[in-house]
Image 1: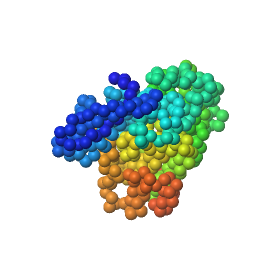
Image 2: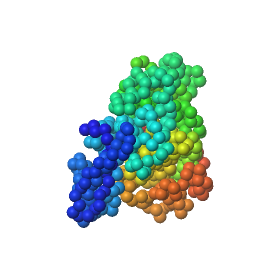
Image 3: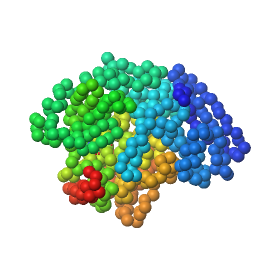
Image 4: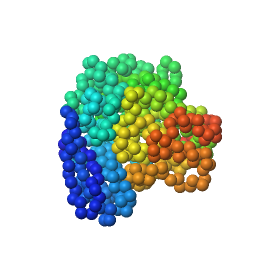
Length: 475
Ligand code: ATP
Ligand code: MG
């Protein structure tokens, strides 16, 4: 089960009679080495040889045809690795699993807790605390290794602070609740929140906690409070990440962090501004947006992304669920649990995060990636605003990953209904070649955004979505 070495599956040859060769490549590294497992593929029969049994089984139920696999067998291996690691099914390493079931068909398959694999071969010294994320650093083949792959995630800095126990490099033991609590005690407001807020009403349930509205006694303002039980968090360090990032990054298109508290033995409350309009998901699933409204929402999201990226932060989970709306048409980005902060020199990461359907091809094929993954996801979110859901949502998740890796820019169901300028905007977001993909700043100059309607124009949609959901007996 828990081999410590990293395996990398590579296609070997491709001729019919070639036997799968298992080749062990020891990359000179004190901490880690990579097993390059060479897998054979026969393009005529469309079959792999030397594939782990569990992978063959996954392939069989995925609905991916042999003909399809023949188009991109290496891509198939890449997404199989990605899929098994993000769902914790990888027999090669021990991981957690969360299947984050949301309503209807929008079931998420989120990479769960950080699998605590040893770090990749260090070109520069890479401290063990950089491993302490929900995400997993992926060992790169030596030639692909970025020599400046040094990460400065805020929680990593936190962990570097004196007094915080560091995880031993070879220890797979997660940080304990007590360790996280002691770090949090330095960060949070020591007051008792029960003296500060009243009139709690539950408004939502997330994977990491329950969200309430409450009235702030001193101002009479309504706030949102996310209450998390730390003992139940698979990767508690991430919570520190989320708080530190939210606290520092203030911009009008980002949900404002207000305060945080520790309550009782192991509860963390994060207080933030309340957005009464609900999530953009409700609007895209229940109503039809016109191009002016879509342009306005894209512009607001791009402003948030331009700001984050300028601060060397990648959000990594851009999707309509993470866009909250105000009743006057405010559009704000939330959910910083996955975000990564990079040093300015190291602008690429190679960890697995986000939600499959919104993920950029370079993520699902486990290549290094940078801020432009958020731009791809924004493009997918724009498709949600057109079609009500992201491409491949009803596919088997493994097949969805394979299609993202292989098809590149997804096709629209009815491209003829869109203006040319909107299609150009989408193409710039959903460009396979990362260097050619536009940045947030570039997209803010795109002529599509000149079509933007006033933000107040989305208010009727918010109201209509609320009404529709109320009629369906939710919300
Ligand atoms: P997680 O973030 O734990 O992975 P999640 O995104 O499903 O899971 P939460 O972020 O905890 O869940 O949010 C739960 C619900 O509360 C969501 O429906 C969200 O729209 C709503 N919500 C969260 N924060 C706010 C806020 N500041 N204002 C209004 N509604 C909010
Ligand atoms: Mg959330």
